[in-house]
Image (cartoon, rainbow, N blue to C red; front, side, top):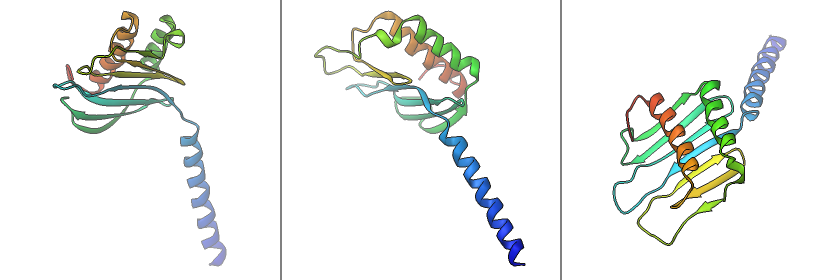
Length: 145
């Protein structure tokens, strides 16, 4: 009986360690966050992990308020990463900003590079932000934030 109990405990702990290690191997590869303005600007954050697991948190002025998770396909993730590569995302400035207080900011992160777009970003960065948004909208089954 003692050996049987030990075997159950051992197998359970191995299963726990396997699950823990598999989640440790994933990493955040893409995120997009939109911040508040003085009006009704959408406020949300999306985080995409290397295994496709995606977390969305809608805070205000969006059609889906709260936390939602879904999975993106490799193709969807690769389309974002390809666009980032095509626009030389890693060579863009870290911040595009002017001293204007009533505008939202968009934070776009691809792997280790994070860019703040308050105002004045190149159109190619705005297009990347739009691609990420459209993929998320499709998964959330809504037409616009």
